[in-house]
Image (cartoon, rainbow, N blue to C red; front, side):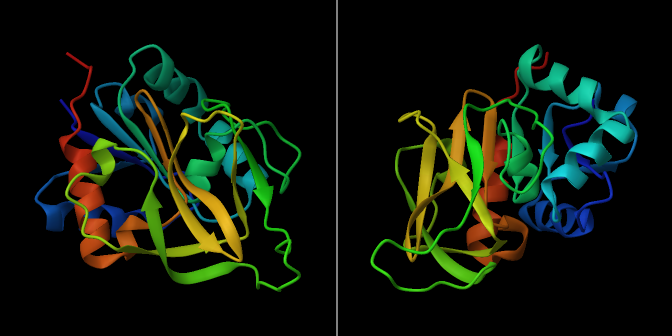
Amino acid sequence: MIDIAIIDYGMCNVQSIANMLRKAGYDSMITRDPSEIEAAQKIILPGVGTFDEGITALEKRGFREALDRKAHTEHVPILGICLGAQLMTQSSEEGRLPGLAWLPATTRKFRPPTDGSKIKTPHMGWNYIRPTRPHDIFKDLPQPARFYFLHSYHFETESPDLPIAETIYGESFVSGLAQDNLIALQFHPEKSHRFGLQVMSNFARIPSRVA
């Protein structure tokens, strides 16, 4: 049985994720074949690029139906990273197509802070996250925790129980979401050294519901 499947739909350097998992002591499989995720106990959905391109690539490569089944029927742990995390929301101001709609959230463009100060987009480089509630993905994470970011859009949700992390960039924004088996992280753990190593190790250790 496949433990961790990394979805390669042409929108990310998936090898860096596999390398980080290997460094943490866990094997994974990079796949472009939807049939290969049927036996997966956990799934990582990465991504770099635009929202509509990401949704289109998933559907064109035949991943949409298989991913929906793994998310909602089998309830396997799924980790979305950057664009992959945004695709888990309902929609994005970046595009016109609906998202996977797994999480009750939307993806919004950064706006100027209300105090009149200016920020540059994309938000690029190292920044701190603050966990807003306990979650296994942040277990034993060194504090203060720094991660690598590269994005112009961020999560927005009216659900008070959905956010698990926040980050300051001009103003506070939600940088992590989680609901049941679904985890969405705006930052790149695979590029974040010891902090990312802990996050990837934590994900690998989350119990799977697949028998």
